[in-house]
Length: 86
Image (tube, rainbow, N blue to C red; front, side, top):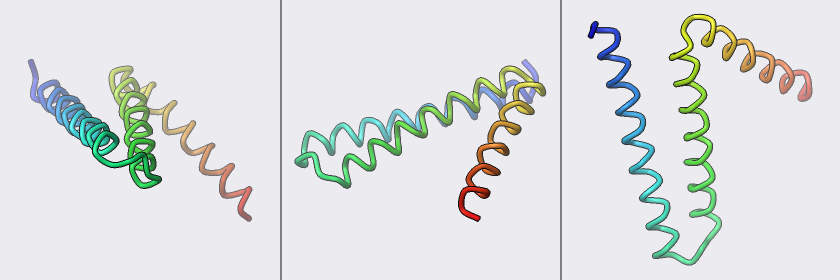
């Protein structure tokens, strides 16, 4: 296993661990506190981060082409938002 593979595995495991902890915290808050808007907002953001982590991981595992395609899609989405606001 090369250093890059080891670093990538550490990145995946660290990100996954943080997301699992955040998800557990959100579920705990949902049980302890009545479903308030703050708890719902937190859980929605954690769900979005799961999606972003999955897309980023898939792009990294796909290699240079996957990262380029993900970057192109993000750039087009940002351009669309910019044009909508201006």
